[in-house]
Length: 400
Ligand code: NAD
Image (cartoon, rainbow, N blue to C red; front, side, top):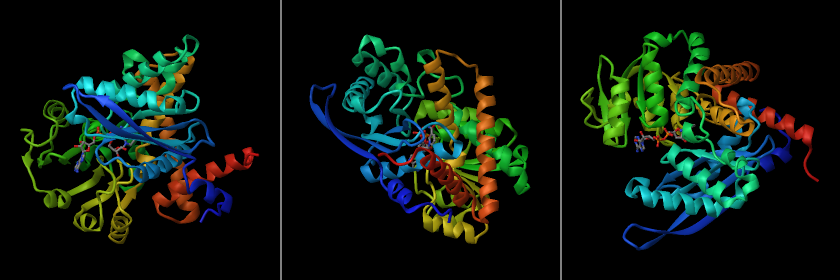
């Protein structure tokens, strides 16, 4: 549709680098287990590779290849000076002790060590990983580097704890960015943030911050589902209490702020916004037929299958695409990296103001492309991203 030259189709259809690492870790009982980890570097024409590290039993190469490609598009849409990557370890981190998790993280970091750096490839948290894991990664990298480059090493990962080079506002960044996108797009859909009803799948980092920030704006969070079950409250779940409950209990099931609801009823609940914020490909054609919402807001990466998307579009349910909605995370990661490289510390207000302006710019580019090509917002988001990548390839040329 955008008329991309064939040479760029060829380049973007495959990641530049795909790496697989098998590495041993000593368990607390003295036994050793072999783990498999990956790093996929999709494209770096715009800048260093950038993308999360996932700790999950289903992590495998093809899955990470698609997520790395999505990162390339996301960075391009927001016009960040980053390319796209993704990595992970096939592990159920919840089954490991804290010491085992630390040894696994450090050993994996040493395995990928020569393939990451603050100017080459910068990992971040994703499903199953968090600020503590990023701190262990940065510490391992800094210890294994020579004295000269120790300080620069801090910028090798983003999403670190604030006390150790992290940025104000990074933890809530993906939810905050989504809120800024909604502020830009909802008025055009005759919806008002302060009297919205919402359902969420996932109440981890992205889901719980999205729920809390929407509730603080006056929205009613009617239901939440995660891997432990689904709960519902017609008057609105207490989004803050639910976030605390999940930290203490590992999931939403049993939270006294709501009543249990079965999965199909959860999907069929009437709401303005249905927000998937858990894993990929959860809204297939069958689930899309159940939905009773005006807009699907993709907070997770690729939460809608192609079949699900056809059903939603047929049913005139709008979809706000993931590469726009959840780009707040990588954008504040960019701010963190920038602060690390310039030895600066921004306050939360500065982070939020900069984030708002970047998200508003990306939303405007999506609307403009949707108008120009007369296409869905998802197609428009990819078109705007591809056009940016294309311009940069035209300027740089293809080596040699
Ligand atoms: P997380 O690990 O903090 O939370 C994941 C959530 O998904 C949990 O609430 C978990 O219970 C839920 N979940 C897992 N399996 C489920 C199932 N089968 N059914 C229902 N719920 C299930 O992860 P996160 O960081 O919040 O990431 C969520 C999504 O957002 C992922 O697609 C991730 O790639 C994407 N994302 C995250 C960020 C970020 O900054 N963390 C940025 C951009 C995109």
